[in-house]
Length: 243
Length: 324
Image 1 (cartoon, chains in turn blue, red):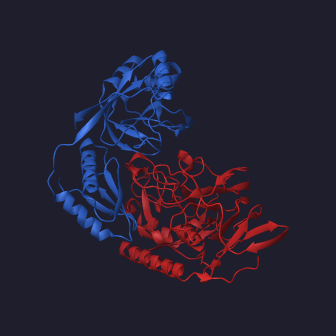
Image 2 (spheres, chains in turn purple, green):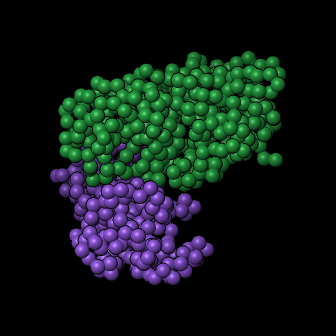
Image 3 (tube, chains in turn blue, purple):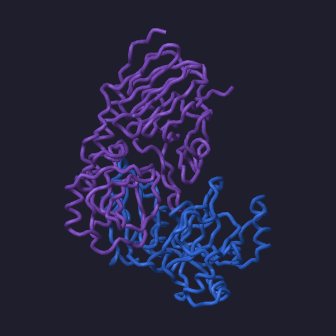
């Protein structure tokens, strides 16, 4: 892992930011995720948890158990080490309905991009997205990259309420709203599956580094899957892949 | 019937808080836990609890409760207000002292006075199940505490202990210094370089005021705006309790225990962990001044604070038995 462009930024006395760059870039994010995995695997003394983001890693530590200098030195050693085995990843096939009330902004996105609605759906379903990070609200996945023809700025007037399950796009990213929340992204579809449940041992369906593809379903299939999800009778198709 | 506190009036924002929730920030779940860990810890120590036992966090104004247990031992820390007990006559238990209340007694914690935040600990703690490893309430995510929410009228909040034995009560050796006028120390960064030199000077020399739009997620401040040197959008990165982010308005926001885990505004500085309780206790309308220290100094301050807390807990003063 090259150290040339890595910056250690101060974040008070309980965390350090290790910044790999200031762009949304698959390669930078892969470095972030690799370092995150290594910090976790090494059990660096005093480190409580790590938070990978698009382009940096936040490392939380207990200031009564260690200090910034010791954590920095431990991480510098990890950065200098060998790459290790290629990481494994998971590919999720998430059912998505792009019809009617499930896709309130699809027509508007078509107007803005100059693409036909079914071309937008075809493009969105043809991608194998990379989960860059999970945050904003519990279980909210930032996935990319969208084809350039679909890249739009956020809405001028964010919605006060975006329904849970909404599939949205903005800038180079696509996302799914796990719970109802405010939001400024364009809603082009909806999934009936659950993205977050605090009763699960691992409460978020998607983790940083996962891959996601969307499988188009009609409104009737959406309802059926939703009923099955409510009865805990549906599992999202998932397979192990090479990262 | 299961021992409980019955909530007669809930107060402004009363939640169960315990240990911080760790291990789920990478999927968007913040740590939560007490805004003021120092007061929280002293309140638990006064009733003889292990550190991080579930207690009630009170914001601005406390609840009125009825004891539905043979007896409970309670203590309030973090404000100048006391616990008013009504059972025929009225008596007041000052903050910083434990006391034993018996079945049917009602008690009220009114406006917290100078402080925005205080803790009511109860011997044995509350009997709520941990969610994702912690009993702390994260209201926005409906996670933890009592049904994932703040307490409401008529809630029966279950207790672990059905009784509290008669023994000498405890008191702090001196009233807790709330530090209401103390400057708040910060370490600059991680994005101090996103601000003009003037903005950094203004940030460290101005008086900011806590806005009424403050909650467990963040304390919004009002004061001289801080100018960005390179725009107010960054590629989102991680947030910690105490991160001071500055959106396009130039008005800083101190992120607190329920902060979103990632954010897209530059963060000019981070409140040092020893001083986060000072922020937590500032009511809307109170002033905040910031002073910069190095990270190494912040670490020293935290260790010194830890030693002082341990010293105080070791020295808790036993009081003579109250006449029963």
